[in-house]
Amino acid sequence: DFQIWVGIYKRFGKGPLLNPPKVTGDFRLNLVKWKQENLASISETCIHFGYRSPGSVYQWECLYNKQGPQALLRLRRGRKPKNGQTTRRESRQASSAPKTEPSLTKRKLIVKDTTRCLKKIDSLEKASKKELAQVIYDLKAKYLLKDLIDALPISMSTYQYWQNRFEHPDEDEEELKAVIKGLFNYYQAEYGVREV
Image (cartoon, rainbow, N blue to C red; front, side, top):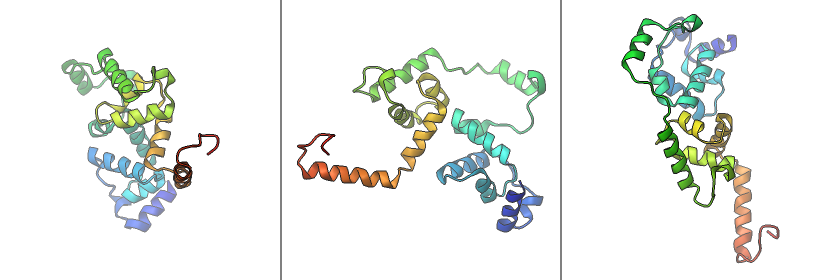
């Protein structure tokens, strides 16, 4: 915490330390998106935004990865009640709004769209984690990330690993791919995998 405070002071002066930035849904969303796009640590993110609470940043990122950006926009300030008790506002919202659990039909739609994307594979069990992660990456605009993870045989951590690889490919790996393609084309596609 002390290093974060020193970093904020160096970047902004004492202003954000005495008057922290106002936390809104947009602030949370921008903070998490910036962190993931720049592959920044929690400390670097706190310093960049002049925000002193690394624990909140961690929780927001977990929430964003599990439930998507809407979860950060809906998040309310304050502590959760102890012993599982609900507040008046929560009980009013629960009685007025229908429950939004992922339905069986939604799960079937996700599986159907996934198998459509994986044309060459007979079943989801035969698909590699990389292929499943690519499908989730493509279908994220259509479904909630949480629903996709629940419906498909892949964990959140595995998906995050592959998402990072898709967004930031290794330069050495790209160079090696170019060399292999060059050899394949040079020999006019006569050699197979082992020979190349």
